[in-house]
Length: 206
Image (cartoon, rainbow, N blue to C red; front, side, top):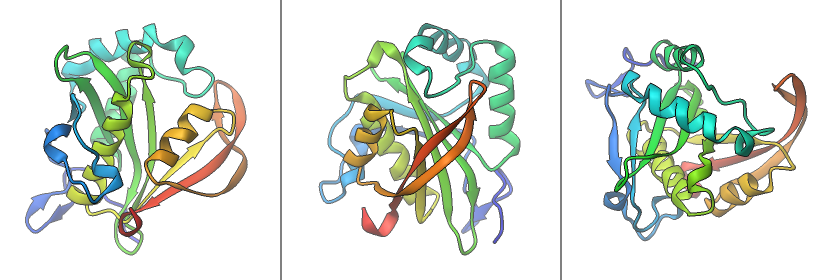
């Protein structure tokens, strides 16, 4: 299996990871696919350095909402570490914003992208407190899945979720993910090893 880098990887002469990816989700409407949804008011872009201040502020305001499920960065050093990983590693960082206000709805990561015979990635995500339970993170996830399966041509996405995180489990279930198993002490978050459920979605099963 060959691990995909960001800019060097190409398909048909074009980069798999364009420097600026943008989609207005309403333009992605397709009634016969669960993950292409209907109409939304979100805009999904590849992260850039210009997103730093907005992301830091949104994460800082959402710390109580994020914990204990995710350790989101709250300073420039944390952003720089994540951004560097998106630039130099097999990771695509996507930022969802509400179309009207331009405020950040959430962050979605396609991590450890592997091409070749595997064609898969790990899906990580978190929403912001100000848009909780408004449905926009669901639309952002649909757009990210469409990007992963359509633009990148991936075959499989895997999301690992703590079993107590019922809202996140409900979200992936709504998007068609299937529970594949349970991994004890799978990830270390905020200094503790935490159990996770494994959920996956296949491009040809969506």
